[in-house]
Length: 156
Length: 156
DNA sequence: TCGGTATGGTCAACTTGGTTGTCCACTTCC
DNA sequence: GGAAGTGGACAACCAAGTTGACCATACCGA
Image (cartoon, rainbow over all chains, first blue to last red; front, side, top):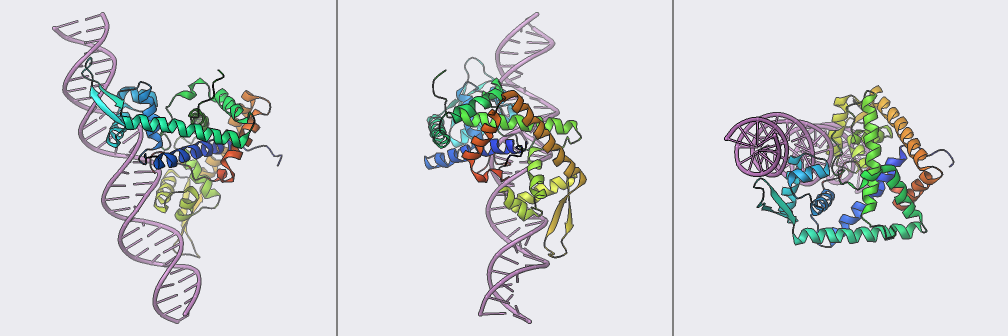
């Protein structure tokens, strides 16, 4: 019981926590009319909403190639979360904007995440959750809020 | 500053923490002679070492289909981390065992994770890291130590 | 003991998300 | 006005996942 915690537990706990949130989110989103939503879509949509409205910009924001970002945008367009229009000022650009369904998905995601956080808060009690968040913020640094961690599990 | 922490920060922080550990691990593994290692390989290898020595067993352990597990085993075999032999008692089975390189990779991974945990410990000070671990253990439940969270980012 | 069922492994076809490399159209800047 | 940079797209490929089908073997019960 008092043996030192093994280092390999830490990544497993972090992943398990992340995954539990994401799984619960998508189960709830499916229930609320977004069965097509995938984790990577939420991240990308968030980035587009935050201003990364072209494939090249989205690629930079998510740390992937512009081609990969272009594919993701295509996919989000085909699901109906994004639509693209020509740019008057720059004929090369095709500007992506969120559709109503896109905004709805993002708004519901935020609500569900708030609910899930409340559940953790209730479960842990006191100030343990804010302390957990503060510790994580401290070790991951200010780069944490970047969204460039979406789909990188297999490749370099 | 005192506004309530938004729920969507929590998954981002957890993912950022996980990713920072995994990125650092693989940078160090590459330096120590394992440039081919991928995150998913470590998980699979760990599962094989823990007794999931056939494709079907590995599939169950990692929560993927036996076909996917079979492909992973093939991949690990081609890199040189696993080798497969016939099973005397059951002619259907092809039992996978870790090669020396496989054990080396696993051992080094454990060491690097220990180092990384020490770095976090130093950075946070006091009992904040054990508290973080305890909180996570509490919210994710006993299922946490299962390895079935490897490569599920895009698909249902 | 034998026949039905369960299990392990593999093949094939497909999907998703990623990669490079190439190319063209358009902007920007000197 | 031309060189350099940027946005987008196409092609070919890779890794890991999925289902479905199939075969060989093992297990078990009437």
